[in-house]
Image 1: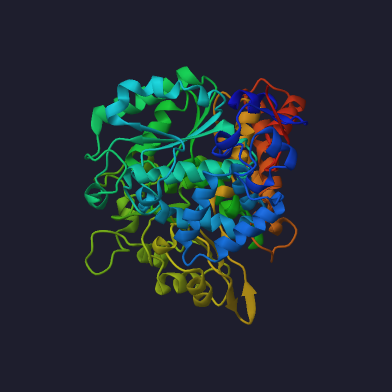
Image 2 (image 1 turned 45 degrees about the vertical axis):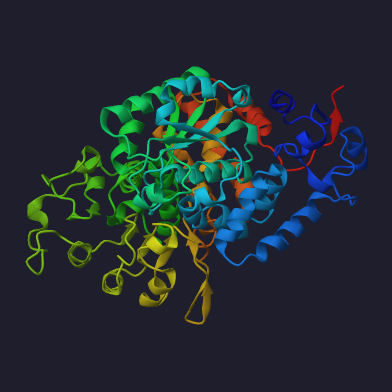
Length: 568
């Protein structure tokens, strides 16, 4: 059946289907529920299995929305949507695509965090692939199943660093499932192209290990050379099975994320959304914010709280953009003050990772900044002395951006740019309401989790959610449409620039930093086009621009029911 679906992708006319009766209704990719027509009910032996009323997808969406809105908690809504995805994929994607702003917090951040924590409670049906350490010798056989013949993009996680919640083991599968759902709902990538994968190498989460319902491999995490060998076996199996697939790494620990990306980015077409996707959406949002403030990126001073893989990725991309503005590389690096749990990154500090070293400051620079006899230089010390104009948080530390720090920024900059990006909401460095109140509405605020609009000075201020879903669906669509061999830094920058160009601030400096989520489908195509064209310029794609347009048109799937005809 998957072969038939792929062969006619983008074509018109009835879809040839070999399944019937219960088998057809139990196939989430083909099931239409009450939307099967009278003729289809005759042809596929569905009479008696469905109530007699014949619905259309609009009526089904209204029915599901009513059920969702009646749920008592966000997690209950999340569980209901997961059940719908496993029952009727077309309806699931149509519901999200037509109600993006309402559905995104349900199927993705922040609710997906609780979905991962409680994944074992609601697991019902197979979705994606679990590759567990005890099955390492079966990896190629598992991936060889014909069901996966048309896979063109993979999201993989090992569940160790889920959002700001840490190790969730096999429950981390909620993230690849959620990401792939947005590949389709927001990027239009056909569902049969998408494969979520969880590398189950155990967990060090005591709650998961003690949970009798836990569905994962109930052992401590495999680490060191055994871990590297397992990941290498996975990458080798993927390359053998799908030589031209796009592989997205997701929610690996900071120690592994950059290392694995560096090791494999030249071996296959791959990117890490926590590093490059977060960098793309943050840089695009900062370009918009700087424009709204009437300034230049290269004139800003940046304090980045949380210099793990995400923080370093953001800083690296911003350095590249500042070089484009004419700054020397050393001048660009000098604009950054990186902060981790030990305070300001300084040269020679114990535990400093290679990717952090280029952002380390000289020890002598902050020697006079230290207060209260402490060894570390805190974020508050940096704000008082270095006077950053941009504050970005990817630390996972709730409340890190204190009132004193924020009011300190207002004392020396008219429009401070403050982005608390950690999610879920319980890990945010500050709330949007506090930031706007502390700055009397002067701050340009973007958050990682959704926040309700805030009343400031008698006006309602909409909060920009700087969510990776602005970029990764379009980035992925552009990569697979260009048939790119690798993912270059230029392609990531192209996604950032395209997002900034889509910002309402391009026409009105007082407008929102980011376009509304309801326009995600069309905006993803615009971002994909920019990424694909950059792949052509980089020599990563052998297509020309006309062929790229043809591929883009062929790869965008519409969540609508097709008529079926039986295969006799």
